[in-house]
Amino acid sequence: MDHFKEALGVKCRFCHAASKDSNSPPLDFESDEKPEKNIARKMYKMTAKINKKYFNYNSNEEGEPIKTVECMTCHRGSEHPGM
View 1: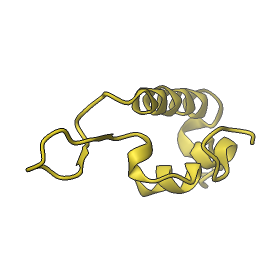
View 2: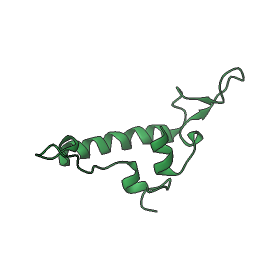
View 3: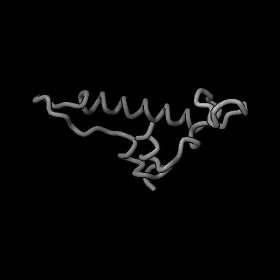
View 4: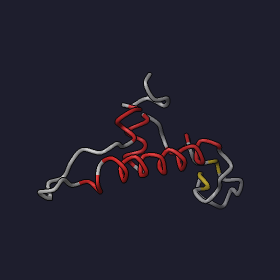
């Protein structure tokens, strides 16, 4: 999860809802209450689809790793891409 935080310049609370149970940890990681969490899932699937279609599973014909699309490609430390 650290790469998501770095790519978007946010903390865990950006996607994860606060716990409603005072006896639980401060964040409810299983909750899908925050829309940002579902947006992140969609973006993750989108980048995986782009990488599969255009970047041939992260290696070229010689087996060398090639650059792929990831969160940082567009977000560059900002909550909203391209800002």
